Image (tube, rainbow, N blue to C red; front, side):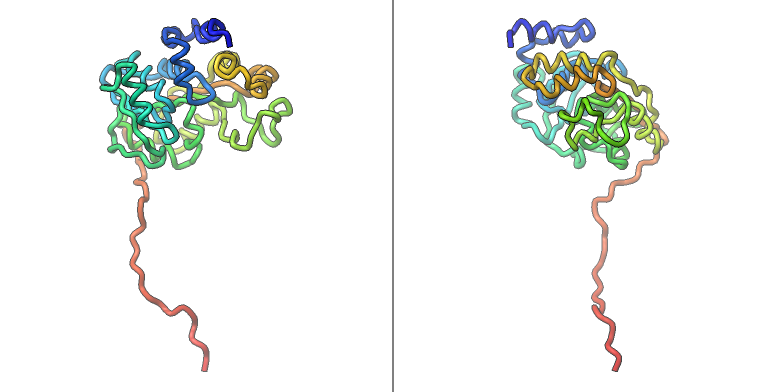
Length: 275
């Protein structure tokens, strides 16, 4: 792609903070199908981030969102991911001059190595769908944020749920794993049902499909199948959603079961045979 074309696509009045970052760095730090800086900037509009806050960036990929959060808001960030190298992320943080405030961690989202109530806020950018649809996951995750702290997610989503068959115009692009995509309304119900958080925002990005398309045009211009799906859909089903919840101080969190203590007592295997 013409470098000037990529630079134009990655400069957006909607995302003024993100537009200050060099397109080569943004593209080189990409770890998924979305511009993590755009989504982080949008998500941060619904968060109360203060300098010195401890923030968990869950599923951070190449840690671009983590570096952005520290540089823009002065927070300390634990850049946590399972699939991407923590060592590479440390180098990226050092090159950005933020290694004293961005701490790369290699961990599974279902086995986090943090103390209860350690974080002031938790964010997840274009990652939460891979584990957060589990009915029990929010109960697990919420213990790591202080009572009254926020949990925020942003990423690819459905604009409306569909039952049954995948819409015809999406069929060539759709894969079984995409069943994890849901609407903002679905996420609101999913989070509110257990009383752990109060949902403060559950909305969609205006013209999110165009934002998605701009990113693909800059980062993956050869991805014809997805680009064609977005053009055909024009925001009917595809876009970006954001959800922000605040942990209720009086929420009762079930302790995670890490083992079941038992004691084996030998018993006869079979009934006695009648004489």
